[in-house]
Length: 354
Image (tube, rainbow, N blue to C red; front, side, top):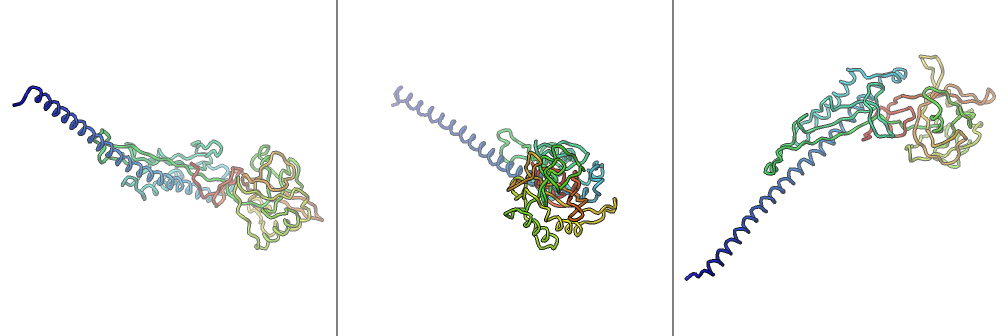
C-alpha cells in the first residue's frame, strides 16, 4: 500500500530526474553547437591563411609588373613616369593571374580591380598613398565575402545562426632601395640637396664634398687598402661584399686618399662609357649612404643606412689635378632586389612591406 509520504518521495525523485535530463539535453546541444562553431572557425582560419598567401603573391606579382614597366623606360622617363590606364590594367592582370591560380576555402579567387591600390609607399610611416605619379607599390586585398568570391558557407555552425563567414586578407609589396655600394655619401647630404645635384668625392670634408671612402669591411681602412680594392674591381678579381642597410658597418678611411686617385681614374676609364644622349663620358655606380649628421671626413666603422645611384663625370689624378665629381640621381629604378632606406635608387624586384 502506497502511503502519502511514499508517493511524494517518488514524485520528487521523478521531478529531479526530469530536471537532470533537461539540463543534460541543453548541455549536449550547447556542446554540439560550440563544437560545430569550432570546426567552422578552424576552416575559416585556414581559408584566411590561404587568402593571405594569395594576397602576398598577388601584390608581389603586381609590383613586379610595375618594375617591368620601369625597366623599359630610359632614366629621363622614369623620373616623370605617370601610370597609364593600360599600365594599370597590366598590373591588375598580373595580380589576378596569381588569384586565379590559387584557392582559398576550396574556391578560386578573383581579385576586384577596386581591391588593387597602386601608389607610393612611405617607408617611415608604413603607409601607401594612392597615386598614378611615379608609383612604386601595389596593395592587394583578397576576399571571400559578398563583394568577391562569395562568403565561406559553414558546415555545422548554422545551428547557432552562423550560416556564412566573411573573411579577407591584405598585403603590400614595393620597389625598395637597391643594395650595392662603392664609395659613400653622408646622410647629411640629402638634408640639404635634392635629385640630380652635384657631389664631390674628392676633396671631401665640405658641403659639396659631403662624402668619404671606405674599404668595405677590410681593416685597417687606409689608402693602400683602397688601392688594392680598386685594382681588384678593375681586374674583376674583387667581389663586393653584401651590404644590408641598417645592419652592415663599413670601415671608412677618414683621411687623404690622393695616392689612390690614379687607380680610381683607371677604373673610371675602364668601366665608364659615353652617354649617347649627352655625349659625356661617365660611369654609373651605386654608393652607400652612411649614418652622419655633418660633412666631416668619415672615419672608422659606420652603419650604412641606404644606397644611392651616382653618375661619376670627372676623375682627375696627378699631374692633371686631384678631383672626383659626380651627380646623385633620384627616382631611378635598377634591376635587382631592394632593402635599404630611400635615397633615390630602388630595385625593380619587389619585396613585401606590409
